[in-house]
Amino acid sequence: MSAAPSAYRLSPEVRAAIARALPRAAPSRARVIGEGWGSVAYRVPDPGGDWAVRVRRAASFEQVTGDLEREVALLPLLESRGLPTPRAARALRGPRGALLGVAHRLVEGEPATRARLGRGRRRAALAAALGDFLTRLHAVPPAHARAAGVPSLDLWRDRFRGLIAECAPLLGPRSRAWLESTTKRFLAEGGMAGAPRVLVHGDIAAAHLLLDRDGAVAGVIDFGDAMVADPALDFGGLLLAYGWPFTEQVLGAYGGLVDPHLRRRARFYVDVVPLFLVQFGRLFGEGEHRAGLRQFAARAAAAERAGGPRV
Image (cartoon, rainbow, N blue to C red; front, side):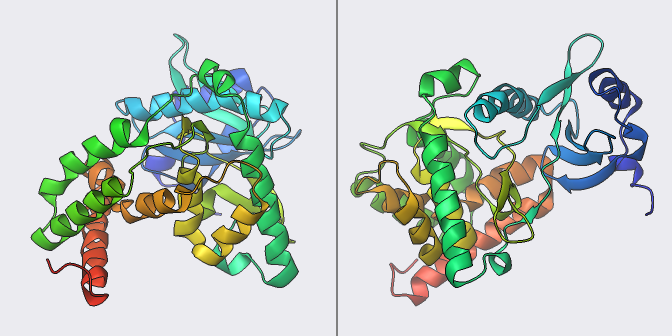
């Protein structure tokens, strides 16, 4: 295997932090296994079982630091409740206590792409397992989650209202008109009124749902976006990744509250996903910013073809 690009090699400071926290691990043999906007994930060999290590891309990304701090505090709580989440989480800190990254036992598995969902009984079993996982996750007492540093958010007031105001001026006329009409309809239909507040993963996606060779859930990873918020957000993640039929299968196995407007809110969260590409793409990469603009344009064009309001 070729060496990792220099941009992705573990710094001496991070290697030293790994040596302090994981004395049997071999950071010199670490290899990249994934990357996000603000962090890079590595597999670090260890005779007692390999570790997954997530490290900030740059010290200036304070949001990423907060996400990692939240994850390392929350994962032990989830582990104590028997959820299929990473085990033995610990912080990797510099000599003065600054958080450099997070380590936990590696979850062996492959991302739950649509192609790996299977059919028939296999798909039904996976839907049942994900329904059980979300039932148990959403049942974690919010007070316990907040004690682990998880924020409690009204998604409209604390996130989407400001995000829409920030990003709308960056869109083309048709995309902006589509976003305005979509938002107006969402609010007219009740917005988030009456939405429950539970502990949610906050970033359900194929890359964060790992399956074993038989298609069963091996583990759910990456809790940096966890929050006490609307459970429809997690179902929106499923909807975006897999579409309605599989999402409905998961909802059928879900033991939490399915209020009359959960599906409507989940649909809205999917509709406005490009907001995050537009906003964070400006911070972490122009490519993501342009992708967000293209996705908005595609949504506006699809609405027009379907006979929606002319824009």
